[in-house]
Image (tube, rainbow, N blue to C red; front, top):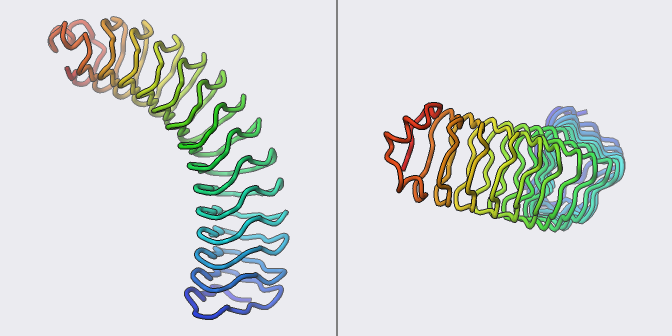
Length: 295
């Protein structure tokens, strides 16, 4: 029974006894360890980053974070429970056990994960950037953020709920499910999104820069800024409300609705509007733009 065990960067392979209980952290990063003892229990953090670990004991439970980044591990055991975050960056892992439970965040960036188990539970954020994943299981709920940037994903499941931000930058996705709710920001830059679903709610910033989108739904709700730079957008909903900034630079938009409400700044550089009106004229035409107007 130990509180903290720090064996990091040992030059030889450490030997640990079976049924070892560590009441604090177990730090083995940078060692030559290839296997953990059976019956191991770690109440704190288990750090195996940059080791030669190839497998984990069945039923392993880690109270806080489990770090496996930059290791040759190819699979995880069934019954694995991680109270904190699970780091699998830069590993050859291809699939996850169906009963995996992660109380914190799950980091899968630069892995070969192609699909997620239907019963996956992630308490905080899920990071899948630069993986070959093409779809998500239906009913997936992510407590905080979901990062799918630079993946081949083409659609999202109905009923998806994301408490933090949702990043779909530079993916081939073309549509979003109806009723999508994103608690934080929604990043769609560089996608092929042509339209947004009805009842879309975004708690933070909505960035549609460099997309082919031409119009916005009338009931769109954006809690932060709205970015539409380099899009073919030509008109806005008559009663659009943007809590922070509205960025329309490099768009063909010619007129703005009189009922437009912008909590902070309005960016209109390189638009037909900026050539047609002065800043003073726009201020009079748009009394509900609270901040500066940049033309």
